Image (cartoon, rainbow, N blue to C red; front, side, top):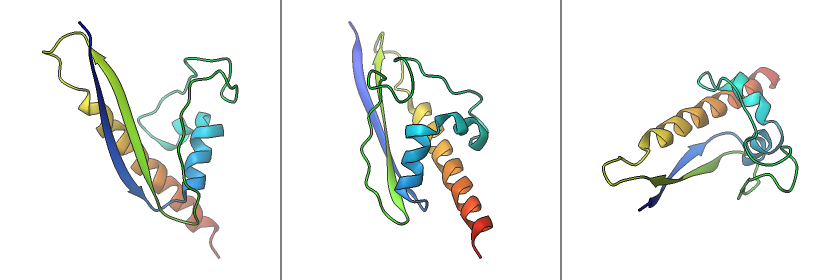
Length: 112
């Protein structure tokens, strides 16, 4: 019997939703240059990042600054003795903070 679950977290960011979305929609290869814990990015399903058959789901709101990032992890456990993957939420939380800090530092270096 497979046990299915879902974990979600929402994190506030100071970066615009547009910049954050663009990173994951078309510049995912840059993630390994922004987050120290990401060593490589690969497409696991589909022909290419921009192909309609690739597995992606995005919901976003565009704005001038500040947004909320929501991460959802869907998982299957092979038995009840296995804990839910809370570590994944901690991991994406750290990556989110790293990305936000990167964009804020980038904006500060460009500001007059």
